[in-house]
Image (cartoon, rainbow, N blue to C red; front, side):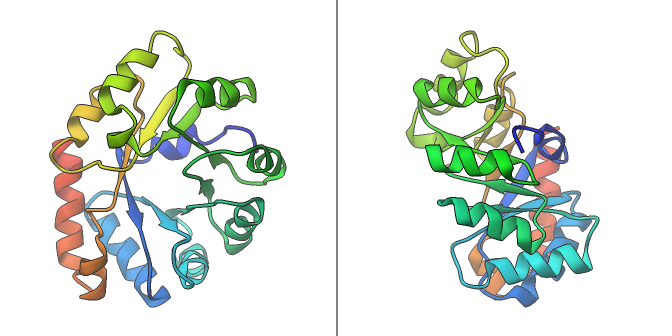
Length: 209
């Protein structure tokens, strides 16, 4: 599905990027985020348990929006769609991914780091892009520079986003939302620190209003 992701990026100004080691954490994590005011997360395909976690959320919390991230190959896009993800995310884009995403029943958020990649994806009909790794490919200055050149593009910067700079990114007119791992960091998940995650979510929402 080409584009179509804008509505999902409007669910929250901050999207937690999560690495799940235990699929049993998926539902309590979603509940903790929801209690803090965030109804969306990206589960990265960095562990063997990621797809199982996405599947649990799709079945048990259908009102919570979960995406599948770190989709590096065409088959990854199909795997997250089959697991029940509402959208797919990639850190970059390849011709194979663009072709596969065009046939996908869910929207895809492709990653970019350069103007050439922005041009290529805009020519394919994509107007919402992931800027990655944001802190290392130009960050806020890059976003400001490309804004007048690509007025139709909106970005979700991830990579180096923190409580200290999230609001500055969100102040850019071409930023729809930001993604970050601090809200539900791996250590918090290992300790099942759901109340801490709820506090982090609430603080992130309050700081970006």
